[in-house]
Length: 358
Image (cartoon, rainbow, N blue to C red; front, top):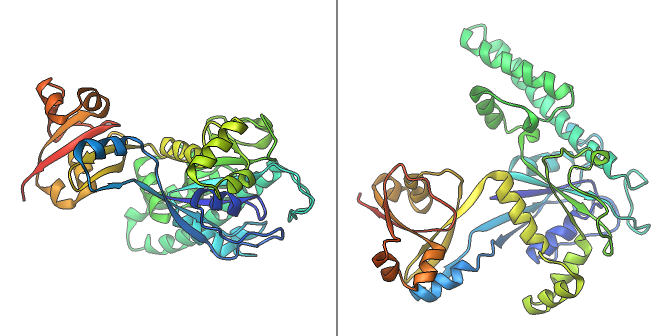
């Protein structure tokens, strides 16, 4: 999973990136301190893997991972390639979802490109620049398909979809807010429209701020059903410099229940409709990320295409049931290990052994 971190210059994108990846990317107080996209991968914390590794005497533990991309800041005109706009747009197209960092802190030493801190205005700027970029792409596609329609009448259906999407964007509606037909969804996916990307809002506040903003706060212009959380990127970056024990103690002292990474992972899995199943054996205990409602053969394909192709059955047991019984053999004897076929929908926390033949 790739998450693009976006926002206005000096919104705290790079500080948040550093807190998540511990990569020490350079940031500054002037606009466009981030000129190239910073990229870093992190493991998705999953305590269940350590318990499975003990039970199966696994040689290694393999977590699911998320790749974060700190994308160059956006200003008015970026949607048409101004400033560092082209780099901004390319980074977004590579992302599965976006973490929109919104500056909600005051600091006279950190310059704002528009002169004043105004979260609602900044959100609107980013939203409109993405819309402008999508409109340009739709226009190019429309002109191309308009010519193709002269020889192929079936193209007219796509032209109608392009006209509809254009009208909605011109009305200020991002693609992700629309109900799309199957054909429209395929078209949006094929074009990689930026406003079709799921968005998580990270409201970057002062270190001592509490309860300054809430999800769906209308004066920020954030939809009421959006995934939103409040964070101090500066504080998170400072805590990332300490080891796990020291950081946990600091969080306890400050009354912080979850780290920024934990909150982003929870929000992104929810927004993208993802879940994890587990595998374990002498070689490794491992977590695999799949979409919810995935059938067993497709989940097996996450491990290897041969396992999906030769799928016979899935031997599955719930993680909690397995831990309660203490061993796989005991869980099996208690009737807690199930044999599932091709129509089985994999569930969060399933520990699975796939049987296959190729």
